[in-house]
Length: 107
Length: 336
Image (cartoon, one colour):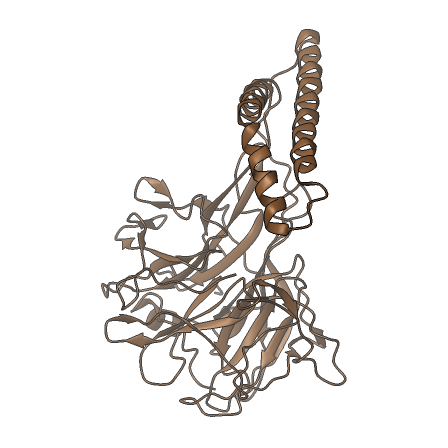
């Protein structure tokens, strides 16, 4: 099968993951969720149906969070280095090549 | 909208594919250091890809189609608001998977062209999870591709919408393990990662509806954590009401009902101004004029309503609903 073709998430971390043994059939468990911050504001706060996807937008080897919404617009919150709950810089708009905001035509 | 970074046209860089609320997948091609403005992804016959419902940009209305229905398959009557490009059949090119906002089903559009020049079939074929079509509780919000169990095969991560506007059950996060043995993907039954929310809490402590999940190893420990966008629904705990408070709450409800009746009366009056006028433009003009003439009364009504709502909120806190993005750290014990 062709590779997943999804953007490499944390460059370097995927290599680590590939060296680990496959998980057993144990049902995955998760810690209680934590609200993410982007700068001083909640990440995706008050956006219409925020839809996050990981992608290294600035080439620093860390996966940033790109957030789409119902209106068809995207923002990026750059990942900050540090342990613990991931921290992100304030969200900025994702622009297209024509200088305008990247706009997924919507209804 | 559900963005995916993927090399859609096999030119070596990452494009953006996204299902949007208009019911069709879109593509923003990578070009140089950025992306071109998005275009609709078309099928092999040059027709936009949809399920049964879509927003008609020319007619500016919601429309229906049976064009993608297949013989022997249940009609795909839904509304595709999420999409991912994925080599589902292992033939070296990217097919499309579409998530249905109106049901829990996922549909497949096979690429019968090549990786560089896709030609998508016109038929919507339901994707199986185990022996039955995938059926996500709460309808599909988004789809993601992740090797969740690190077995070298790409699994399907799904998250659901649920009721985003009231107290009914919300959404959850699920996955279907890829149990295919060759290059072709074959998904196992749906398994729960984050249960469907039952809401009813006094504080925002999770995404309850409109869940859009992504997975990645945020802490470098080799397992996949979840990033989940969505709406939290909560109702802050109110104070114990005295008898006087309870009387006041009743009075506020009664006053609010009177103000709503007053608004209905004003609207009916404005409608009377245009009643019997055959010319649509003239009728609209008369209605607008009558409506504008009521500005003072409407402003007063709105101001009184706002004060009552604020006072009611101090006695009986109102339900809250706000969107955030949440982080779920994977705590699954490591195999020894």
